[in-house]
Amino acid sequence: MRVLAAAVIAVSLTVSAAAGAGASHTITIENMQFNPPQLTVHRGDSIVWVNNDLVPHTATADKVFDSGSIAVNASWSYVATKSGQYPYHCTFHPTMKGKITVQ
Image (cartoon, rainbow, N blue to C red; front, top):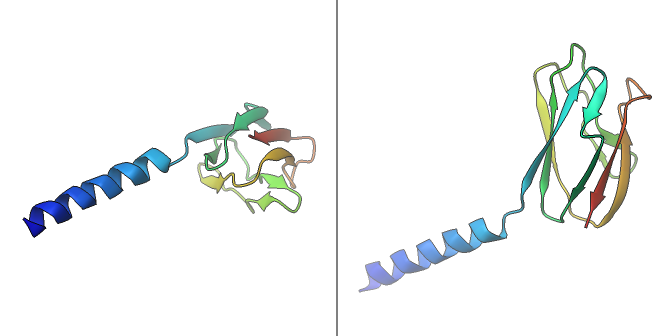
């Protein structure tokens, strides 16, 4: 009986953890652009930047997040924890800009 109760508790905890997990969103870096350039997410969601360009890039929102250099064919992820609007840019290529809105 104890084994069955432990199994039920383990399944419940697994289902609860999966239900509380945020969504995942992808921003592609290609042709010196972030695509999509603007993205709205919810707190707890993860955002993954994938660099499909020919050179390294960053995703940098001053005092909020900084990917550091994202190599060619590499990715970097960030979990949105605080509501607000966060403009970001590539520190290597300042004309590359995007914006994350966290609800």
